[in-house]
Image 1: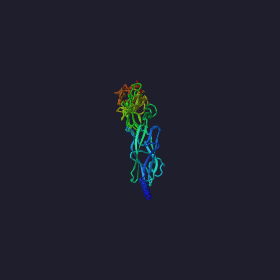
Image 2: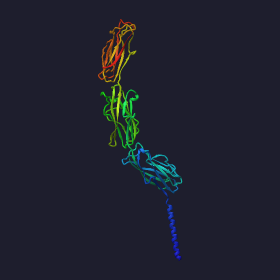
Image 3: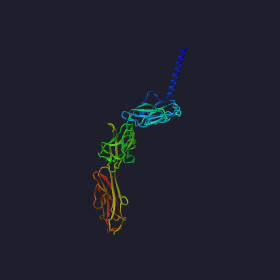
Image 4: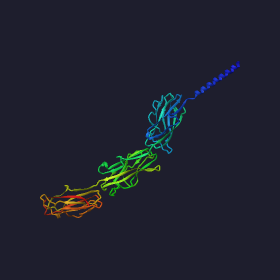
Length: 468
C-alpha cells in the first residue's frame, strides 16, 4: 500500500510540473497583432460602382491594434499599387482620400484627422501613447468624383504596418485590396457667350467686333486628344462676294491642363488645331475668341459660313464631329467722301495778292473716298463762281488752273496736266471697276498778273461722290 501511495504521489508531482511549464511557455508569447475589418465585411475595401453625379463615396475600415509589450508603437499605410485600370489609367490625384475618425480611439494619437490624399510612400496613420496600450479606431476612405476621372474598373493594394518605435519587435504587415468601378461620361460642351449657335461679328461697336466660344471638357478621356477647327467654305455674301480670310482672327485662352492656340491667327480653309489636351486627356476649359481685323478694304455685305469643331484622338483611333456653329460677319455699307482743303472747309482762298507777285500762288485739296460697295464711282467738283475779291472784282479765268496728282491712286485721274478751272460741275476722278477706296490730290494754282488788283480773292467749291 505504501508503495502505491508513493507512485501516485510521483504522478501528482509530474502533473504539477507539466502544468507549470505550460503556463510559463504561454506567458512567454507576447501579443503584437493588427486586425483590419471593413464595415461591410470581407477582406478588402470595395467602393463598388461610383457615378460622378452621385458625389463623394465613403468606406469605413476598423483598425484593431493588440499588444501587451508595454512599448510605444505606430501604424503606417503604404500604397503598393495605385488604383489603376488594366489599360494603365490611374485615378487623378486627390480623388482617393483618407482620414481617421476623431474620437474613435482611446489612447494614442490619430495622425490623419483631416482628408489626406492617399499617395505613394509610407503615411503615418497612428501613434500609440508612451505605455503602448492596445487601441482601436476607424479609418474613412473616400472616392471624390473629379472631372478628370475616366470610366473603368480600378484596382489597387494597400499595406498596413504596425511596428514599435524602438524597432525591437518584428513589425506586423497586413495587405488589403482596394477596388472601385468609375462610371464617368466624357463629353465636350461647346457654346457661344450668348448661348446661341451663332457667331456674329459687326464693326459698329467694340463689343460687337469680338465674340467668344466656350469649350468645357468634362470627364477625363484617358488619352491625349486634339480639337480641330474646320471651315470648308470661305465666308461669302448673298451677292457672291467673298470675305478675305484675314478679315477675322482667332486665338484661345484659359486652358489649365492642355495647350490652346494662343497667337492670333487668321481664318483659313485648312484644318486648324485649336487645342491639344494633356497626355491623360484631362478635363479642362478654354475660350476661343474671334476678332474682326481692319474691314476698310472689305466689301459691304453679310458674309456667312459654318465652323465645325472636330475631336481627334492621338493615343487612340477616334475622330468625330463635336459641333457646328453658324459664322457671320456683317459689314455695313460705307460710301463717304473726305475733303481736306487748306484753310476754311469749302472755301478756296488766295490771300494778299499783289500785281508785283512773281511766283504763282498754290492751294492743295486732299480728297479721300471710303467705299466698300464694290461699285464704281466718280468724284465731281462744282465751282460756284470766279475768283473774286470783296468788291466783286474777278480774276481772269486764264490765270486760274487746276491739276490732279496721285497719292498711290488706283483709279483714273482726269487732270494730269494743268487746265483752266471751269465754273460749274467737272468730273475730277473715276474709280476702278471694283469701286476700290482711293485718295488723290487737287492742286489749284493762280498765276501772277500785272492787271491784278491787290487783295484777297476766293471762291466756293463743293465736291460730290456718286455711283456710276
